[in-house]
Every structure is written in structure tokens, then in C-alpha cells.
Length: 355
Ligand code: PEP
Ligand code: MN
Image (cartoon, rainbow, N blue to C red):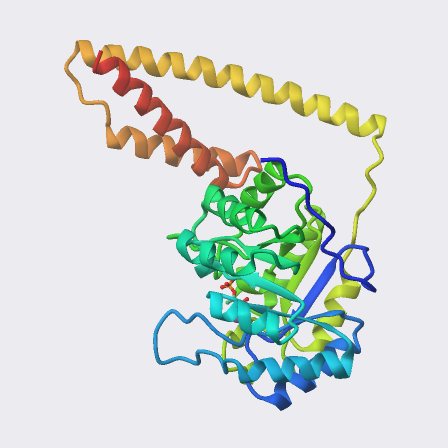
């Protein structure tokens, strides 16, 4: 699909990276919304966020203040001049948000997984002109993410952004939602002109990781950051552990290193060609390894042996992890690679054994 996006940068906003959206996970009270907004505005932030309808994993938790929060956001806009943004999950949310003059809408991760829900929202948006951010679906499925973006685009929305908020996987490796950076990187490859925001708060789940995730996002050339910020994070009614104060936000932003140099240099070209050469060697070694795996498959077939010998597999993984350590390689990374190679060898052997 050939996307013709329009700029998501609203008038009066500095186009320099990162474009920052900040505010509490949830609007809780008028006082909390306004005091957070005042402090955020005084850090120079121009876009405020607050959830008023909250998707919660289990019933009985705080499900948001609902439409009354729209009045508080109107007040934020009047008083601070900031643009306002909220999550919409149904067509009714869209209509209420448009009526209240909300400036930016986002589709949450739990909604982005459901094509019916996304289509409903897209239908409600049809013919409107408002920026819409599409968060990644909770599961690491790039096609589903692109599908949601496409539904919004087909409704005529031209100011679209994607938000990377991490993915829920069996092993989240210390994050609330594992970043799987390769997915937003692939999204950028597939839709190069689509602005991408990172939401380090929902990736991290705890405030200690937010700075390093924001820096990583900047180093990967993300366009913006969406950071949950609360005047009193520990007392927040939702996502307390991942929210930071406006002061911490200001500190984090001023400490970010933005590397924007895109000038080709001879040194870099040389290093890249070195990498290309190494990759070629890796591929040719892999090809040789697969040929040997196939020979082993033929041997097993001739001798009526099963394909998987689990002790052998355990040995391979163990030996290579130990070897990795002595070679200054991350053993977990090598384990993942060896698992992938082994899986492919098994697939190849299955083919020969059943032929
Ligand atoms: C949020 O931004 O508050 C939110 C609910 O996020 P997500 O949809 O990414 O879980
Ligand atoms: Mn939240």
C-alpha cells in the first residue's frame, strides 16, 4: 500500500526529535489532572495524555473516570495551551472525544489486536481530520499492527503515528512487555514515512528502566516518546510503578543524547563492508552446516534412528554457551541462535527422512 501521510506535528510544536507526549496513565481527579498538567507544561511539553477509559486485565480495578474526564482535559487545554490526547476503544469514545475537542487519539494495545474493534473506530473516524496513534497489538504480530494502521488510513486519516509499547510474551525478560525492537524496525522498513513513538513506560513496567529505553528509542531514530507522568506516581490509581514525576521527566529529557548525524563517511563504509564480508562467511558456514545435518538425516534414516536425540541437543546448547562465555559473547544470545539452527536442522532432517 502506498501511504501518503501528512505531518503529525501540530502547529506550534518544535519538530526536533523527540516529540514528547506526557501525562498520567489515568485521569483520576480534576486536581490530579490539573496539577500534573501544569507541571508538565512548565517543562515545555506540548502534548498531554491521560486515559479516561481504562482497559483493565481483571474486573473490579479502576476502569477510568469516563466522560467527566473530558471536561478536565478541556480545562488543561484552556489553562496550559497543551494539546490533549486520550485512548479510544469504541466508536462512542471517538464521538465523545471529537465533541470535546480532544486533539489526538490513540488506539490501545488491547484494542489493536481486534480487527472488529479497530474497524469500528475507523468507521467512526471516517471523514474526520485528527491525528491518530496506533499502539502495537499486545502480541508480537507485525501484520496485525500494520493491519490496524491500514484500517485507520483507509478511513481517510492522514496524520497517523505508531506507538511501540512492547509485547506480551511468555518470557518478558524483566520487562512488563518485552521490547522486541526488531518489530518496530521492521515496521519502519515496511512503512518508511510513518512516525514511530516509543512508550517506554509500558515496556518497562518500572520507572528505573524508562531512561535507558528512551535512549535506545532515540538511538533507533524513533520520532517521539510517550511517557506516563504523574504528580504523585506512588499514589497513582493505575500503573503506579512505571510513572515518573514531571521533574524526573524533565531530567530524563535533558539527559537524552540525540544522534542525528546521517553523513556517510569513509570509515563507516569500511566497517560496513567488513560486516557484509563476515555475514557472507556466516551464511556460507550455515549452508555447509545444513548439508552435514542432511547427511546425518540420511544416516539416521538408513539406520532406523529417530531424528531427535535430546542428550545430543542438550550437549550442543551447553557446550556452545560455555564456549560463548570464553569468547566474550552473550551466552543467552548464542543459546537462541543455536536453538534456531538446531530447529532448522531438524526440519531439514524431517524432510529427508520422510522422502
Ligand atoms: C495506556 O497508554 O495507558 C495504555 C493502556 O497502554 P497500552 O494500550 O499500551 O497497554
Ligand atoms: Mn498505563
